[in-house]
Length: 455
Image 1 (cartoon, one colour):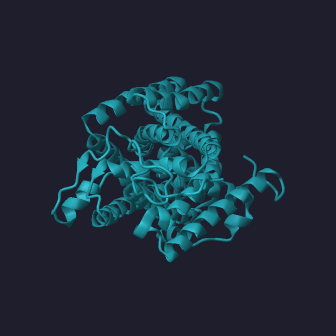
Image 2 (tube, rainbow, N blue to C red; image 1 turned 90 degrees about the vertical axis):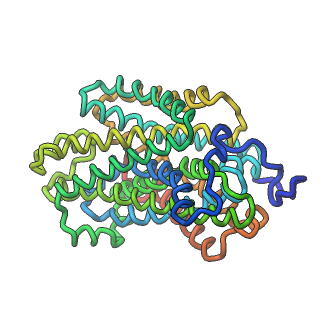
């Protein structure tokens, strides 16, 4: 499956070739980390990439699975959200370490390590996952525009194509501008769901009980289907490629000490951002459980239904509007980072170098065209099923990104002194085993061998 790794002329042990063009070359090492600065100044300099990654953990695909899980099963699946978030923290820490130590993003590392046919296969699988993710984000944005401004879904989908212009404009002004917009939208989403939780007034005891895992999750095929959708929506395959690239936008010392410091601050940034994502994801499910499940409305899975029912069921006129504003911010945020991920994957796996505007236009087109077709054919009906199914597709692609990541970061020949210690290897492979096992169970259910959950 792979060719033997040998030391290269440049002295990069464990890799077949010297590192070539850096990931995201137009933004690589563009943000200076102040030398000799104190802890907080350095943390501020490294803060940003974690939030670009975190937006993928609170995209409209999460909304669909969390709404379905909360309205149908109450608080039970909060434990799945927590487990998924802990997995995400671990895997994203491995991503940033790979990027900082080797100067390669995950896609570049795969291209270096694996044979050409395997590399092409991994690239195609990743592109499918990005299309599934973008489908959810574009449809989510279009739904928000429809709810707030009564814009037809098809026109809303087409309008999202123009986010390419926003990405190009911000990237031209500097990577910090893009990060600032993303962080502002993340804070807006958090504020909206803080209000929704206050409106819903969930029972604290029931919420805390939901974080305790229940064996029913595995025994109930329908619950397992939603649980795997939550896993797919939380641990995003393209985020693994994205994070290993954008941490390299910081200009830090290339010594062992400089890399160790960069890993420390980047890990703090990533963990803090993902804990914020945990609050958002749990908040969506808690609001759905407190509003719909407790009042016997177990059929609320579509975002449009949630919007229509929130205000009358909570008795708060602005509840539905706040919900839609958060959805719009979430969808727009996710399309921005998804566009970057598409560029990174195309360049990393295939070494295809195109002009930034053309790369991003292609990536956006791969999402907008199928999303416009879906919106035109299905309209509002069936969008929730499509959103949940897109997250299951992401979950099925996860092992093909996670296994190389865990493999590379655990090899001393590739990572040197930064290779994962035994306890991290154990946790990483255990996480991988859980992901693979859940996917096998899902496939068996689809095949009807264990009762089948159905889509």
